[in-house]
Length: 403
Ligand code: PMP
Image (tube, rainbow, N blue to C red; front, side):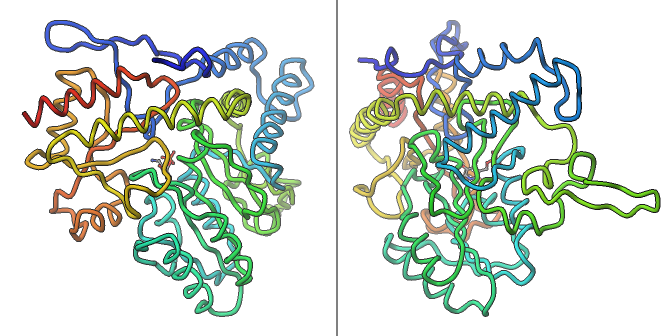
């Protein structure tokens, strides 16, 4: 059965790929890396193209229309997130966290778990690193201890809403309450979460995500959240658009607008238009999106449970709630061989490796994460174009491999 009729359509759902001497419909199970473009996103970009022009300060009609489209896109993203003060358009989640890392006040105590994606883990100059917690309650306890131990002053807890490796949901609300009780702020990596569940960012100080994982692959991401640190920080990009004035003697007055201050240069208007279209389309019926994914994930997990030697990876056990993202190892086969077998013989796209989360993989697989170790896994991830047949083909392909 397919629920596609009730779900937003993706571009490329009918893609076929070469397999041996023939072709097969592509079974894309790699949504967590990048999701295909939504048809509604493609339409929005196509509609915007005839009036495409540079934004801001252009008196011409096309520039006016494009400026409006860009700022409307910002408004749509703001609404999508429940109304944060600032919505800064950036390139992707990595860019968003690098911007935030430069915007935090000097001396901010940053606390981050080792289980995070590198984009969330690495931008900080100094951070207290916490080992992957054994339970969600242990995550809250470890964060409390670390935040309380930080020197007096600004503090920031950085955490993912959902793991890009195991798909497990993190106790973001509890962590936000805790951070606030400790006088700290929380920054949430929603790169995976936003394509699968509605995110009300109310009560979250900062949220970051990427368009290309949200069915809007046009090179835009978002850092949204409180305006004060963003207004006070040095501009992330120094250049036109972020200035109020530049004097002949070189003195620069930067704009105090939290968004424009960090968006110097000509912005990626089409990326913003695309992202906003995806936000609108997904928000139209989240229940359908969640129900379809839940059903497919159950099908996938019960299928994988029938594959001898397959081990599903998780921090918090098989019953912890998760998104349609699942990493596994297959005894006796390298992750690379498994992924290659699935691609070459079955036309299936999965991801293999360490998913830019080396410490987490080392923790889950019992290594140190060093460069000379294999320590890799296979990841299958579901999305709006996934149908039962893709899931069944994956399970059959794995069963064939293990004999
Ligand atoms: N955080 C998570 C949880 C991710 O899955 C990813 C992408 N794999 C990132 C951050 C980084 O996203 P981007 O590559 O778009 O910057």
